[in-house]
Length: 240
Image (tube, rainbow, N blue to C red; front, top):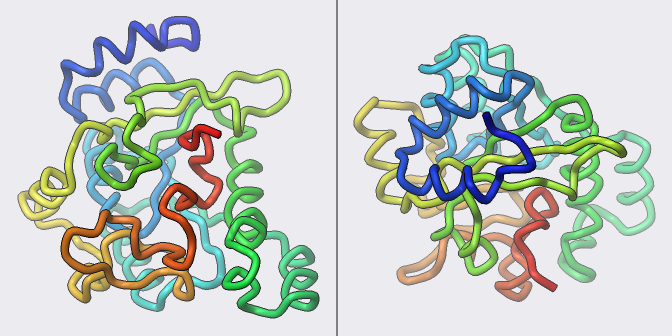
């Protein structure tokens, strides 16, 4: 049985298993769980989880600044799998204060953390306060901040006071090719921005296509250091 007390043992076991088998055990052991869907290649995660549990809870963060293609793709996935997709929204007052005080593009001057905190981190914190665990599509090969991402971990960053929150990354040991092989094998829909050179896809002002030999998240917040390319959702990855 998976618990916070045997995470090291669980990771050792999961390292010998395929993502589908990891998901199967996680969904069996932790019923109060949600899947995170970013509107990018983690459609593979949504599809894999859905095949195992048709009523799987899935959420996506609507920051209000996604590409039109991403909104269309999210809706396509929702219809494809008949998902009761939970859209998370930022606090309107906080957004109004930020844009009134600093404008719409302050992140180009003083970094992305303040905007991401309002549009992503706080809505996610509210969502995760009511569950025991969440599942993400993080992989070790995505960026320098994710090279040590485990298959299972205790997420102290988003745990509500007095609660334990678990986090599972069943694709951690997969590479980009593995994800795309799965997408093509099952003819899954995918974000059309991938055909335009976008790999890691976030908000429209903070995402651009990448070139050869760049890591996936090089196109995110490209004006910042590579070691800062986390929006706050996976801040646990960054070692200070």
